[in-house]
Image 1 (cartoon, helix red, strand yellow):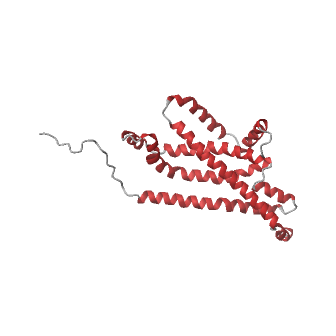
Image 2 (image 1 turned 60 degrees about the vertical axis):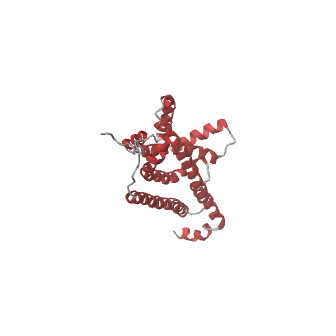
Image 3 (image 1 turned 180 degrees about the horizontal axis):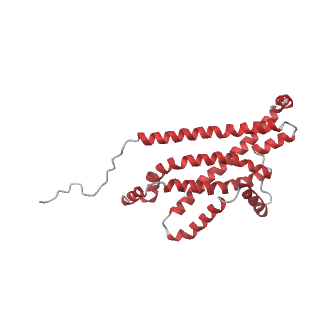
Length: 247
């Protein structure tokens, strides 16, 4: 303990802090890349899987196989699968690029299922009512499905993003200089392991805790707006304006 206390001034010097900030930035960047691609591609997967067109059936089967496959294998296995596969295609690809591809594959599989659960939570009579009023697929999605699905998918999506921030530490096994690998570098410089990984723990907490609080605030706001939303009167043009019945 005395040795760790004496190491604190030397540990928090400019170069070590810059190294830690670089590791935090790499962790955040991997999370942003993975989750952004996961939401975008996952939404497209959900659109295809929920489509009623029969000619998309082979593509649906392929997408379902992809989602189930990548949700059933560990992230570390995906990392090494991408590592060996990418070296065959492009030997010059960086380790960070390999990790980015791996996180996109994983996040797309998980987030597509979260989005699909939110979309399917919308009651079927509401969708049928929108079809009856000739809303069309896109207008139904925009005005009926998404406003309700967003409240359902937000909590699990946020939990996944927070978990994903921690899972990016596995990229350190390939040598990607993210937050966990930064801790290994500092520990190899002779600093106390308790001091190093205690600081790494605090860094992960500082990254993930504000996100969890923001998600809780957004969830409460959505629930509050749902309860405060006034009832809307929907006017349907029946084409009988001015019609007078005859005796």
